[in-house]
Image 1 (cartoon, helix red, strand yellow):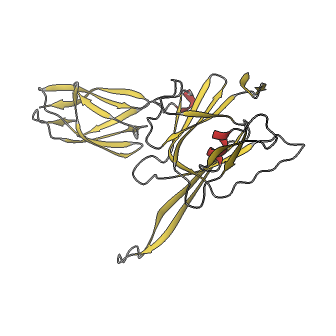
Image 2 (cartoon, helix red, strand yellow; image 1 turned 120 degrees about the vertical axis):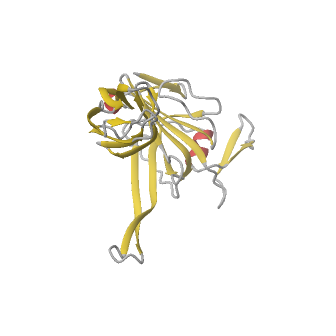
Image 3 (cartoon, helix red, strand yellow; image 1 turned 180 degrees about the vertical axis):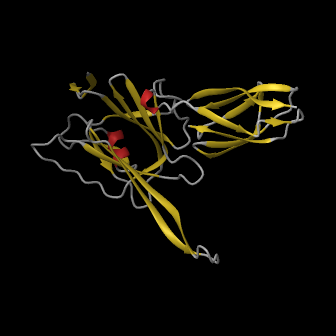
Length: 277
């Protein structure tokens, strides 16, 4: 597939691999294929074999007063990084790689066309950015969305006659305590969660006033978003595990009602699974 035309040379690559950047807080793409929202700008293509994701969770042991578990282990940080090699040299790409910087016009002493001077940011001058790593592989689309990131310390640039000259973009993922540090948008059906099943509803009877705490056992229930009893939504949904959830019944009329669980993988119905008395 033909890639973008840069510097009057067409880059031909087997898949489209592009990097988008924006100020932190810019509206993120809603899906894997729609046009990027306003505020995002592309820093071009990257080599298809250079994309690397690294995750290095750090754990610390903390002593407690509990006699059964005097020492417990907690995850304190998750040092995630993303690395790509940009194919195009440009001012915006240099600023992306070095976390900022300035570009000024230089007038050649002998006249002629103008030149430009790029200076990297000084210590403490790097700014956080939002990033989207976009990959199209055949008919499948992937967007790796990072709401907050910063260029990593240290940029190694190898200029060799036998190698393609690229710009190494190394991003350190920021955040993740109370929001998603990064996530993937894709239309790849391999990501489709499996369909849920129900094997039991306990108890299977309760008063018409509702308020019965029901345990539903089955499979693939960990992505459940709602449970209905005869079409009325239950409340207090709690995902206990992949095979179990609890929910409180709503008020209804007397008789057997279908129990329907909705998950990311679809819906499943237990016909007459709960009877109001």
